[in-house]
Amino acid sequence: MGVSPSAFRKWLKGEAEPSRERLVALANTAGVGVGWLATGEGEPPDLRPEGGAGVREHEMPGLEEFVLLPSRDSVAAAGASPEVPVDRRGAHYMAFRNDWVREEIGIDPAAIGLERAVGDSMAPTINDGDLLLLDTGQRAFALFGIYVLEIDGERLVKRVQRKLDGSLVLISDNTDYERDVVPAGRVEHLRAIGRVVWIGKKL
Image (tube, rainbow, N blue to C red):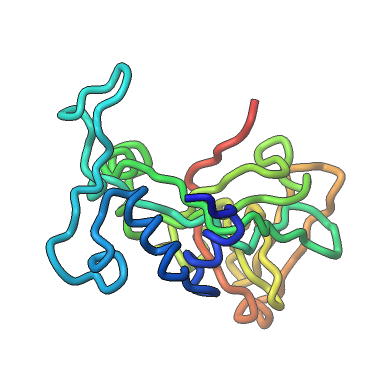
């Protein structure tokens, strides 16, 4: 379309709207009608990808078979840095097959969340930049597990152990970091974003 990625991202995030000329260029590039693109009215186009090299069209699953997860601006700190860097690359998505989520992870795809780890406190289990899939249906801390949690507005990823007295122990897999104990009276200030059920990383 001759449009910069930053301008396109602003359209996706609702920060700006394309001009009439850009709207026409987008419709022509995507092979859809301008009216449908602008208002959503009329017969929706078939947006499934066509067959390519090594792929037959009838083998391509429909989009409804996938769950699309946005790569959020927020990150889960796995370190002691006072300032957590923010991913400002714009709107990105990862797609996972619904049947893979159900069979391999064993949870409802609607409960899946995505976070990116920052820091080295959970190394070697979780490294800086690793992608984390969360079961957001688990908002209560179990006896033991790795969670993304929020405390005082900061997101952390830690191994959490729940004690019988109601307190929580936050454990870092990196032995350079000490354990933190959250007294039972302070647990209400913690919010579980979800339990980590899958880790994606570069080799």
